[in-house]
Amino acid sequence: MQRIVEHYGDDPAQVGEWFLPDHAGAPLVIVVHGGFWRPVWRRDLEEPAAMDLAEHGFAVFNIDYRTYENPWPTTLLDTAAAIDHAFATARGHGVDTTRRAIYGHSAGGGIVAWATSRAALGSDLPGADPAAPTFDAIILHAPVVSWAQASHEQLGEGAVDTLMGGRPEDVPQRYAASDPIGLIPDAAGRRLLLHGDADTDVPVSQTLAYTHHLRSHDVVVEQVIRPGEGHYEILDPESSVSDVRRQFLSEVLIDPLQQRGDDR
Image (cartoon, rainbow, N blue to C red; front, side):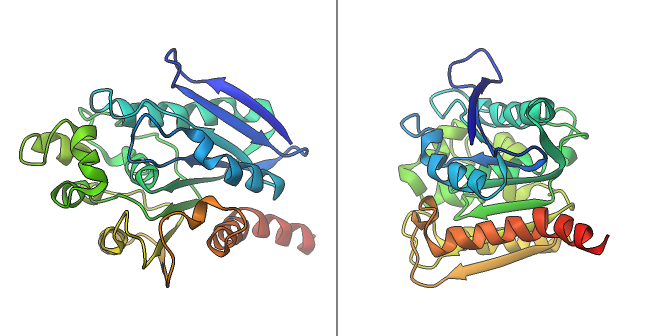
């Protein structure tokens, strides 16, 4: 495996790390860490997962971003820039960008949900890009995807209010522009939403609401509520939920290619 750190902007936090298998032509997986957008949490949260996925044949770009001590919409724009950077530089690393996935955990799942709605944003909204990349597979684990509800419930001790610069009643235009539950999602690709029913950090209601939102837009989504699991099992590559993630990525990104090879 090869590890390469790359900056996608001038700020020290605007950085990502490639985890590249020894062979060329691996599919792209972008990883967005959680941590309620607090500065104490960085991409090393996802380092074990990134290494594991690379060992299983995926080319992983594990990103950092400026967190909620920076004004809205800095965190969102950094994520968009990191995604665009991954696509711009992947081929130079021998990565196959025709097969692509994105994964986010917790608050990172919320950012991924926003990022996979960029194409339909109004042209005057932060991050809008009608040519924003689409993905074959989108995986969200315990995502914070209904930000107004998260604000009302004070999830993460008010982390959403800090990220957005206020409550929904204070800055309604910001929530309307970026709260994933109110945006039009990309219809492309397959989505997998995973959540433990014993999660005390992010309630299952977040996943249930977003699944309903996706299906109301005719988006293909698989929802898996895992009994007895909490919020952090996904950070362990040896956990059963991590195995579900690997299997889904393989099913979407690797198995079809192998099947075509077998048919020749």
